[in-house]
Image 1 (cartoon, rainbow, N blue to C red):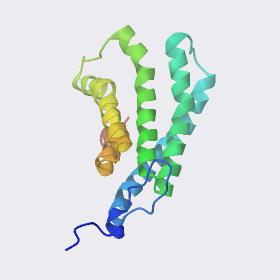
Image 2 (image 1 turned 180 degrees about the vertical axis):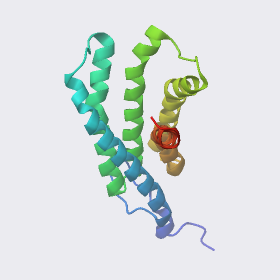
Image 3 (image 1 turned 180 degrees about the horizontal axis):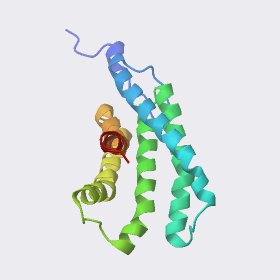
Amino acid sequence: MNSSPSPADMTPAPTLGETAAPAPRRRGVQALLAVIAAFEFLDGLMNLPGLFGGDISGVSGGLTRAYLVTHPVFAGVALICAGLGRLREAVIALGAMIFMNWLSDIPSVMTHGFELNTWFSAQETLFHVVAAPLLAACAIALAARNERIGLAALFASLPTLYNLFGVVMFGVGVYLHGF
């Protein structure tokens, strides 16, 4: 009656620097992160020309430029990590990208306040200024602790999914009612 665990039961969880083959149940999480990261990478690349135009000066301009530069970098890192099965690192990179987006919005909120005039502007403002950074913080915390990586991936994906939903609804509205 030896109650000590066998060596097979004592396999340690992979650390931040190790690569482990993803378990079958994590394939869906890996696919979600890869799709979200690929979309964000392309979006970041399309927004890079914004670095060279317009009046981007002061603190607000600096934060906007920092976001425009880091957006494709963080998304690219997340895409590579998701492709390699390093889900924790992919979630952390997406969370950092969300924080940079939030940080670039803060000067506008400080200058103009919360736009709560209509239902659409109210829910969009509250999501981007309040909910998105909280989701990113929770995602990063869960991933850093290697706990509930599926939930962390969902939290890191929700801001992108929210934005995609808005684009689809706009397209549906244009299709139904014209431009």
